[in-house]
Length: 163
Image (tube, rainbow, N blue to C red; front, side):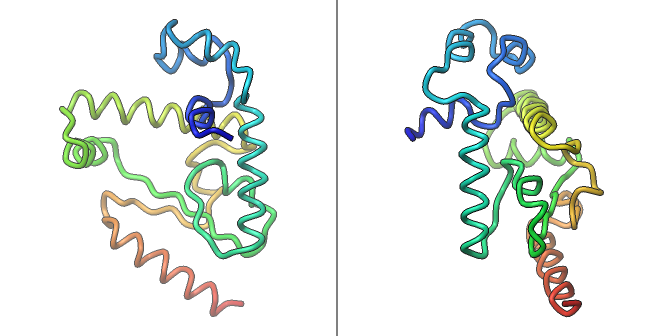
């Protein structure tokens, strides 16, 4: 499948006009969203879900996003982790890493959160970011990236001891 097709449909729960408006895409992309003859968002989800299941069955791996925790929820040796931080921390981090103005970074955070939540909530049976659906929830704003890595590693080691 051509990469551009994935990008057009990536992490969008539906091809609907209302969804495109809710995500601030305006009317310029309506024809693409209403008439995506190559790859619907639902078809992309099925393709990605199958790929996630195949990869997880064959290899130890890390999946980021794509409802992988939901898709693999019936697999016993999966560890699902949700990493979050408060909005101010994420805005400052995006300003630093992407060189954006604070207002642009705030808009990006808001739209990204909305996009991720809409996608997850559309395909999964639980709500995005609800702690009870994950094995581990970490605040990267308080722990930092290295701290999150250390916590995940410690969790995996402790879980292995319990087996």
